[in-house]
Length: 113
Image (cartoon, rainbow, N blue to C red; front, side):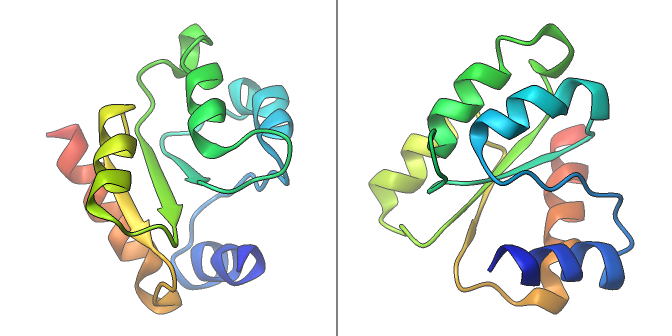
């Protein structure tokens, strides 16, 4: 799933991407990369998406960077939990790879307004 998302975002949508294989890896690299948007999977090794988001928010340069969660957990209570944690959107798995870049762009634009 991660490889599909990477191809969809770089080759199809033209995004510049830093792909991390865990929350710990994201914490170690995100500030230097200075992302405009962060896409987090809910289920990741070592730290889940919510834990990673909470830790990212402790980094001053990333405290306001919009975050979108990707998850197969599509219960309304779960969605609300991610939004309450500060996510600007949620993408449900399975997702349409050819639309992923557009979806993220729309969420980013909506958040930026």
